[in-house]
Length: 329
Image 1 (cartoon, rainbow, N blue to C red):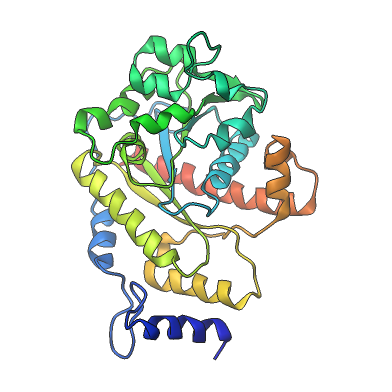
Image 2: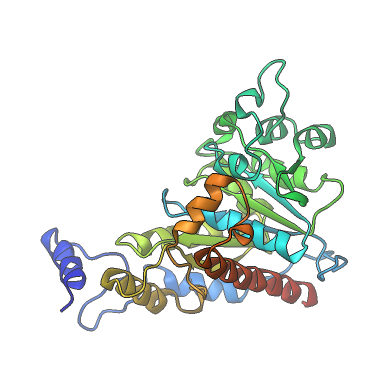
């Protein structure tokens, strides 16, 4: 038995608990509620009145990128999709809902985050938009990124944490969706980088989204994290956003020939089936190098960067194809 599998089983038996969804003997390997949740997504309704008028067959596609566990590379996936969209020529708006502002500092490192929302400051951010989701606030906050005119950014701010209430009302949850409807000119794609928690900010992003991109890494707690995120998507779909669908689960920082990673990837595919997206994203130092330099991964001149850029191209293809399918329904 590979050491990682043995350790996994020992860690479960030592406390008398099994990891969520991991059975033994004749017990099912389906995670708690998994069958019900996956079946519900296949029956998702559509909202009346949505017309397919955009260049790619949809008015605006909003995709929220989330993980309820920090440190799995959620912002990396958001930036990779943004890079692929710019490379493809898709007009994109990046919304940085994470108070850590990593997406903001990467796509426009010359911005001055300390000035966001400060009296007399020179910058407006998503925090001011959530305070007052009007056309005037949106126009002041959105700016063209350092990645070129195809990528605009609604910058993040530490003040955004003030809007991350644990139990917000429905009216509050729709502020982001209402603000995005006032963006002029409308982009073809909106990418929302969510914080790694299930409060008002992430729920607002799901309420505004057509697709949810779940991010995880091949680790011990991946199954639990993915299950919680899927249940959060399902909850918002039923309560506030009937058109919301999970695009799927992106496996980030995968290292082939590492026994633990191979095992966790097989485990996730066994439990969540087609929701686990291909290709998985390899662990490449080029990602950190490009982010540190503040440039798209498609512009970083190494073999590792070209490899992972192709993976992001494939994920963007999947996202755009899902929108075409939505437009035809």
